[in-house]
Image (cartoon, helix red, strand yellow):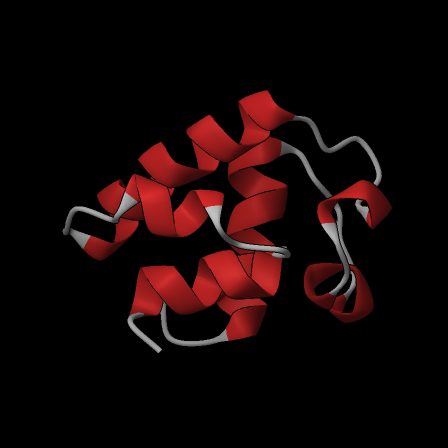
Length: 75
């Protein structure tokens, strides 16, 4: 996953979440259809896609999908 656009594609293809760039940067409560189960599924998908373990505590501290992306790609 090399870009935020690829991350948005992954959200759509793997989780069925159609999000805009603005929604990726907004809080989770602003993402249509978001719930906590999506976070667990997303973590699993990201570990598969990146080929590495991702810190669950760091993901739990994320305030937005953009923050989750940053944790996943090591920003």
